[in-house]
Amino acid sequence: MSKLKACPACGKEVAASAKSCPHCGKKLKMGLWPRIGLALLIFGVLTVIFSPSDEEKAAALASELSSLRSASAASISPRGELAEAFVFGSDYTDIQRENMEAELIGKVVQWRLPVYEVSKQGDNRYRVQTGEGTGTVGTFLVIH
Image 1 (cartoon, rainbow, N blue to C red):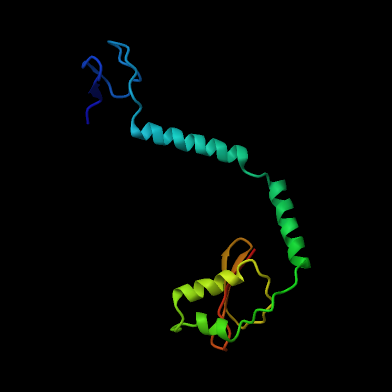
Image 2 (image 1 turned 90 degrees about the horizontal axis):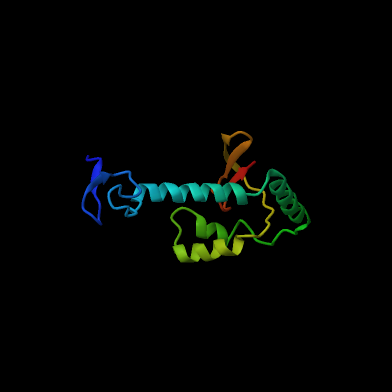
């Protein structure tokens, strides 16, 4: 790969890394990779500047946990239509399941479900899978 390129203004050879032509002084365009690098650098700096501090994260988590403690559980059953919709081989369509899932998002439920498997996902993080063979919906939980 050549380390020289032609200046678009005067046509003389200049180093591929040159920012301007040493012969005519024409400013040369930055290549694609330096632009990508610059964009990533700017993104990284902005991420560091605007990311919440540990104290802000802890305060937000405490607030969310407080609201969960005072929330009342929705009267959504893990049995019946919900279990039928999400069981393997169900006759329900993906759209019907997506609509049912949308009704669950943001709701607090209190269910007693049989545990099928618990696996460790990392430090103080566990994934719990409940069984669906007892006429209830199967679920996955991640506990921190």
